[in-house]
Structures are given as structure tokens and as C-alpha cells.
Image: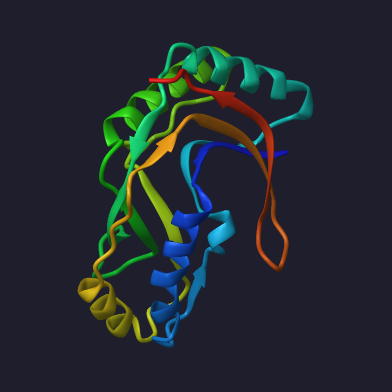
Length: 186
């Protein structure tokens, strides 16, 4: 099954992301916008995991997060990967909580490496993907609007990570939590 480990966000943050997506959608660019209900912060993408190995993923993630404390997170700014001039991905950035996410991600990478899952080749850059650019048509309009847009959220408490199953469908991905790992109260 297609699997990843993520931090989910509360509904008020997802609504704020939807509010920032709406004017961007009107730029007539060919972007596949992530449904706000599916927006999450990925800590580790595993890809296809055999069902008989999912317990290894649970065990490794729980071991990696043992002792990790809850923390506050806020989001700020928008951009694109690899850059905003030629974006393939439109993202919202992390303001507060970046250090805690980086520690969680590193610990998860190390524990899952021990149970046979290779490390990510790229450096971890905490962000929320809100759109995937499918064509450069009218990209200048989209980029200009992103550059003018101010985005910031209130702080929210993050108290768990989730091992998720992802099922791809023509209408979009369906994410199902397989295991929630609670963080210690800080």
C-alpha cells in the first residue's frame, strides 16, 4: 500500500489554505490544486509498503518519536519548487515549529533505515504542498499573484504524527490514517 508519515493540520488551517487557493485558481493556469482536506506536512514518504511490513513502519515511527514533545506550529509565506520563476510545486511554508519538524523527520529517517527503508535523497524542507503545476501556461499570472499574497496562520499545537495510507483515484487521493502516534505533552 502507498504509505507516508505526516503531521495533520486542524480544520481552521485547512480553511485558511482554501481561502488562499481560491484566488490563485482564477489565474487560468493549469495547476492540480490539493484539496484542503488532504493538505498535510509530510515527514517521510515511503511509497509502496507491503502489508506484511506495515508493522515495521509503525514500530520504527513509534520508536523514533518516543520522547518527542508536542510543539506549536505556524505557517507563513508561499513559494514554489524548484523556484517561483519555474514552479512545479506551489507551497506554504512553515514559520514556527520548523526545528521540531526537522528533528522528528531526522529521527524517523534513521529508525526506518534500520528496518529497511532508504533515506530521502533530498534535504528536508518542511512545507505544505497546495498545488502541482501541470503546464507553464499563464504561469506569470500565478507567480505575480503569489508574490503579492500575504499568508500567515495562528499558532496551533501539534501533538501527533500519523502513518497514512494513500489511495490514488481520478477524483484525487484518499488518505486513511493507519496509526496515530501521540507526542508527549510539553
